[in-house]
Amino acid sequence: MTGDRGGAGDAAVRVRDLRKGYVVHEKEPGFLGSLRSFVSRKSRVVEAVRGVSFDLAPGEVVGFLGPNGAGKTTTLKMLSGLLHPSGGEVRVAGFEPGRRENAFLRQITLVMGQKQQLIWDLPALDSFLVNQAIYEIPDAQFRATMAEFTEVLGLEGILKKQVRKLSLGERMKCELAAALLHRPKVLFLDEPTIGLDVNMQESVRAFVQDYNARYGATVMLTSHYMADVTALARRILVIDRGEVVFDGDLARLAEQGGGGKTVRLQLRRPATAEDLGRFGSEVRVDGLSAELTVPRALVSERAAALLAELDVADLTVEDPSIESVMASLFGARAGQPERTPEPV
Ligand SMILES: Nc1ncnc2c1ncn2[C@@H]1O[C@H](COP(=O)(O)OP(=O)(O)OP(=O)(O)O)[C@@H](O)[C@H]1O
Image (cartoon, rainbow, N blue to C red):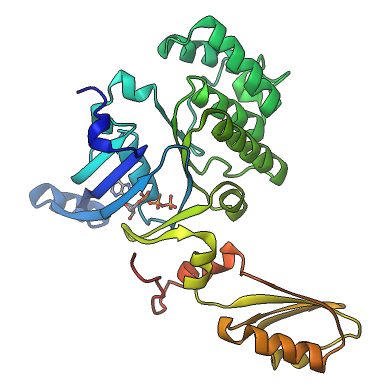
């Protein structure tokens, strides 16, 4: 089948009731366990993705978040056609990913921060030439894209070095360049900045931003670095145990996370954590700077009280960081009662 754009409407990505179960064979430990598993092999199904639905508009950048094992990678692999769904429907750029048609593969890319596609013993440039051949990129377009990526990613001087000799950050930049050389319209980025230092993370983000603006590409991004998500994405999808539990903008996620707002103070006279503890929780004091968390409904009342009772030079109220929202939603999962946002 060729691209059935009619079926996909205008969405770049359309997912309906998508499911994936992995069959896992279980074996008891030790030699006896191995023997027993020959006689009666036990297996069970891990429901990694359990009926996920969403649409992504062309050009949209979406952060795809969730705790470890939530089903992010499994979803991205199904969207890029590396895994066949157990059920449901997927359309990406109008194609059914599982068919892995050439026309589909030219429209998408999947970058996995933990995996590499560059040829280890050769310079990155050689891998780029291989990709040029695979994707049949015309010479002029290849040169123009290389020039553009070299400038935005600062690849000058590293393209001719053996990949094995590059630093992690340099290699990741080359991985991204290789993965985007064919100018895909839909990008699935799975932890593209994992392990990189802050500067490298920043330059990867800038590159993705630039690419999205230049080519109007749709981007779905997972990252454990919330700065990636807040810098790039307005919309957030949260998946938990294989189900989408939130789909909306960052501010609404912060609201659903409960928690409260962060009140930051600049004081003229020092105050103790105990003084501030009367106004909120999670108090942190550092010299004349302090911050505390205040329930949303009580923010104006508590701010007024702080201004009246302490010698405050400046007071600001902010939504909690997305790290703390995610931590409050999922961080304390082990052995504790669940706090999951309301289903969408
Ligand atoms: N090949 C596989 N066989 C069996 N189970 C699998 C396989 N791949 C993933 N799983 C299971 O499916 C669930 C979802 O895994 P997945 O890798 O999609 O999660 P994730 O959200 O990407 O997690 P992380 O943030 O840790 O990478 C997990 O319970 C995982 O153990």
